Image (cartoon, rainbow, N blue to C red; front, side, top):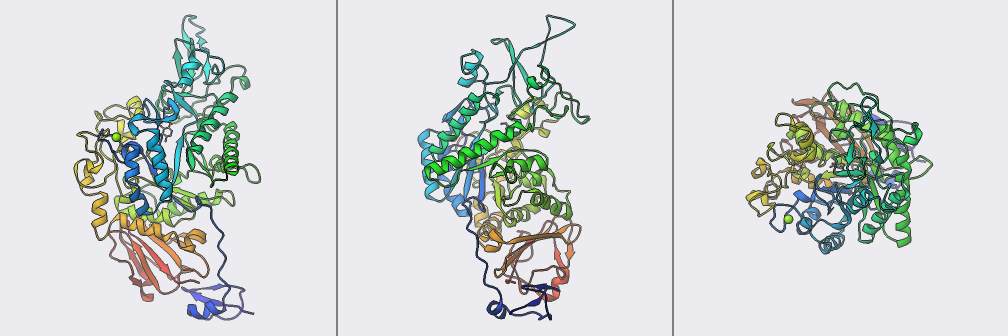
Length: 608
Ligand code: NOJ
Ligand code: MG
């Protein structure tokens, strides 16, 4: 019979049972002989603890000198992705598109956009990536198609089979003036203005939740749902390992059959910061989060799982883009005890609910909220940025880059990196004249366009300090290069003794540690601005992140933190930290560990 209690940083922990005496600081040798056997680690599927790297293909690497990134560019830079250690890439859309919304307006779902390359380039990229152990995720845009697509042309012509492919509605006759046409409802598009666009050809309105060139499919038409499965199958056969599912909250709108034959107006939201033509001015209750969409999503999951079984392939994953409240978000995982949904919905809480103003408690609360609401047995994920949001160091503070990257790497589940985060790229400056994002062009003016523009987060990747940051040999690039590229670029960070790149890379490699892949998590605020995240697995090294998210020095006390046994060694630290890897935090100093503003330290402690 073996009962052990020992002192772990000022508190006592019972291992097998709480009996007897405090043994004090036992050495691991003794514990190892007497303690329980190391736990068996549950094997993980390829995606469950991977790092997904989002590539915005237009801005990653231009191989043919036209100022626009392309597939060959990605193929030539796979070494960088192997070097940093990611497991999968998700590419924003690469399909044929008039580029009104830079690929999120697809006109041919089965072919590659010529400026990005050919099908052969795609196949080569898939092969090269797979040979290197990197999975390829594509962007699946089921909610809408380009108004230049064959689907739309056929629907315009009322071709049999396509007549109801999109959401068509008759105009409302103005009761005061019969020659006047009114839109079917007051619904507002995400990029501003009515969702309804008049078609002279069909003498009807069609619905678009984004730009008028992005026409919403009618998911109540079985032919549409069937075509979506054809598309999914097609790219699975071409080697795609899964999909990011775009804009799924918009799949359905209210059905006139449930509302006396009309499209019901939405009540006003009361949000006084919005203009009447801006999304959110009305409640969006008939245009977003309709419950019907979940069944479609669950069907996709069934299809993806079925494809995997039939073809004896590795798991094909589905990741849902759903900006929704926490309850509706969690339903994207599936129903507890019922059907499965996406492998995960992206966790946008770190983007939506945290900023430079957040305290340590805010971080702890937001992180715990996801983990608390997540249905049991599911995999968490952590997102600090994407092509739709201002870049992470611009939303937070530039001295927080290493801490934020460390946090996403140390939290349980999947970490997602938007291209450039590994070197701390910030928003680029894009003048009004150079602005190309449809969201900004539609809703903005020279004075306010930056409130809407997604261009600053999309400027090209900084490879080195040569012309165009090594992105392109063309005299111009589709978006300007951010001015800080001479200072913030991959080559310089590889050469520097300390850099964001080096911290990022060492944190990814730490993910192989069992405490990170399989351990429990403990997160708590130690003060207003500093929190600690501990990953712990019995008989394995423990790792902890200490992070001061405030803008001043902060001194915290580790004496009351459980699970951190001596000696505490610095595994990694922010580039501006005075601590270097391998430093120890002596026992006497644990009661007053000082962190500079934005400083993060990752500590290693021996097993308990
Ligand atoms: C979400 C995408 O991330 C965004 O870039 C796009 O504009 C909309 N969905 C519409 O497809
Ligand atoms: Mg090119």
